[in-house]
Image (tube, rainbow over all chains, first blue to last red; front, side):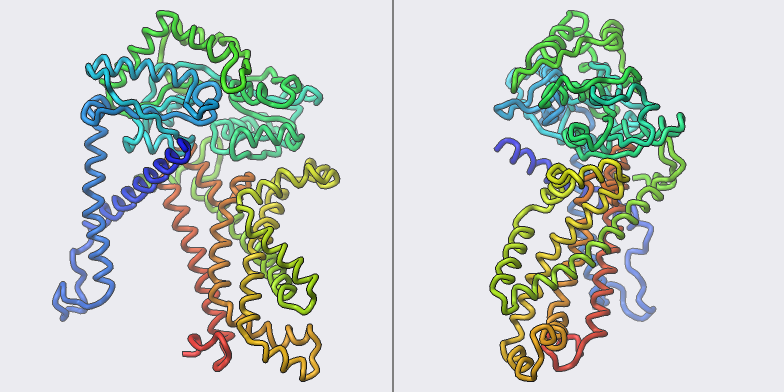
Length: 349
Length: 244
């Protein structure tokens, strides 16, 4: 039920957003045109009975209506703290299957490392605004809608497994790095593949719409290797292709692969290649140009890192059995993450 | 909103974004065209079988229609691409060494073609049944066998009658190709999504895709309308409006 309703909210928010943007395009175009198109000189303006004019005026009416709502959104997102204070509610965006960062447990409740960190931030917001009864709304987001929903104010902070990239920083802002992932290649133990070069001419799968796609292409070009690229719609499907031997290798963030392997039928059948294609920082995503909220997020995370709470949360989600099936990812803290906790930063890649 | 994004080159690539979307559009068109041929051929055969004199063939055809009509399209894609090769070892051996794009294209066209054929079969059946028994009986009385009766009497009128729903079906088919993104076929929707993910210009990407789908669907509509007018026979069922 939860997923069904949040899904609907998602769709509605998405549709509203698209509509609003579409109307904005019209708005941007309209003023450059004459208000009333002269009709062959004689016809009095505004009295033309051509149906086209009626169409134009109804479009204009739609525009006027939607313009109002666009204005409200823009105003609301001026400052997240102000928005939260005014609405009495903070909306936390979460993912449904980013194990162990942000996913749904057996009761369909969002849990995970990023969710825990976000809830600490929410506590800090409550303290700062002196609103102990602040309502916390959890809203599922996907990799495709997380940025639009954050920008249009549907969610106030996104707690998932989002890479902090320079490209994305043009659209959104990130809190301090809370995790560092290495993009790696996983193969079956039974295969003879030892390095990326061995994959020449072999089918290699990655998930469409992820940064790994670009990485794979770049690598292909630089090293003169010719992969036969296959794209899965999501990580589970990509992994299925590897599991069924349809692909010889799967290129993805090591932690995501570790989650898939740990949950697979034969977790011991897989091994990573040594090569690291890229190291990427993950961060909690917030709206751009919101220094007050950014400071609160960063200060909270920095104090959690200093106090050792981040390390404890890490141990809870990455090296202990986790819900729903009590599987242990057995993914010890990496050198890169230890470094990022020691000297907190929000550098993107 | 920044429309110049389409002229920017992709990261780590020589192609610009509009070229990438255009390559996706190419796959979409190829997929829709091939699937449409499969759908028309299979749909007509099944529609004939459903209305023919053989009880057994009629029952098989009815099962076929229900099978393809009752399973959601995205699940059919999954079954064709992921499950079928697992059930058929020789197919699996071929799939593993074949070009992934070819496998995806084949799975997508078969899936869409057969899915659409079930719907076309129902339209063909409805069209034939709308003609009244007299036509069939008159044809048989003239000495035509069943095949000749369909070929020369029933089908020519039926197709004129069902042109409007066939047009809808073609437009649906074009739009349904987008579901092929789920098996990784790099068609227009797949490319749109990818562009959004990489550049975060979702609105620009989806606006371009919306426009492209609308233009293709409208072009398909116009083409079908043109054919409808060209083949219209005044006084024959289903052509009354077109005759004006």
